[in-house]
Length: 429
Image (cartoon, rainbow, N blue to C red; front, top):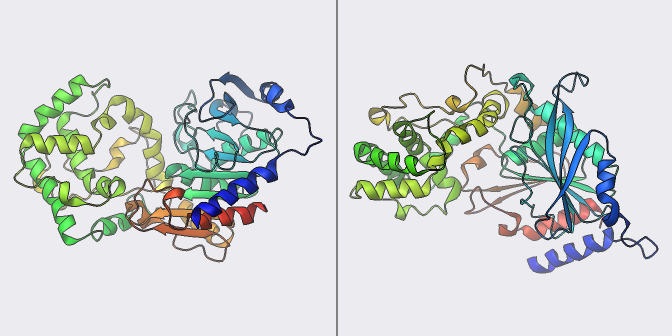
């Protein structure tokens, strides 16, 4: 049944957005670049199109650093416009990170939609010349995205739908909360609503997910790796020396301990939950290292990526929330990072005070006024512990896919047909 519904959705949305026979056949495909150039506060250049689009553009929008002081300091925000037709729908992707010309949403192709993908303030492609961190808030970022929608509504006439996964999904939900009329509908995948800087619901999840044997194998692997630290650290040193990245902010001992501490969360976030492949206590140091290396991502601890993710961790510990690194069973083996926390990944010497009212306000709004939103989660994903509890009194839809992790997509869902049926209804096609 799902393929039929999916096909019907594609056909109806395409037909509903097609031009009438009396309309000019190709005018906007000729002058769309000029139309974009004519917009206010924008610089644009055409680039090689990706993902089957006929035309694609990289643009920079001038935004105020503080939307309460629009005549004050400014910064440029990078966006990518993937163009189909000015009368087709727009899939708006407000990023929680930077933006890329190669990323395409699941909705853009079947809807034959235009796509606008915007970098998040303070991330690469949207960094102010002065990194004044107290202007990195969800409300300021949402105002950035609102400006983009308002500007491009002058060109694109079809319905707008916002889409995002993980932190991108959070950005879409906050944008919707502050500017509910900017889009007709929102699809947010694996987007958590965390209650605290280190929300204990994630710890509860990790202590109960899977079987007792799964959890024991994970903890046993962690302890075994740390017991062989003297043999494994030289192997990490060799990896770092051969990497294309630079490592001066964290040494190999710190990287080892962080990767071990992160292992349970990452295991459930990215795998199918089969713990039988985890090395046991009889594994050699090389086998332990190889598994940890292939499973994890040592380059994450490079100077370049630590700098890149600083805004993410600033937001995590001021507004968005995060999780605690569970170290209770490892304290006797931790040397380099005796008091582990992701706070150390945030900008140095910058105050980090978590405001729980931000997420409380979002949750309350979503459950009382957040109509036309589809929430998608994987029940094996630790971030599912932070899922919206219910859609409340709204017409929105929440789907939790069994045995799915943080990479769950619409096409993975048993109820994918329901997603497309619901979007058809909201779009009126």
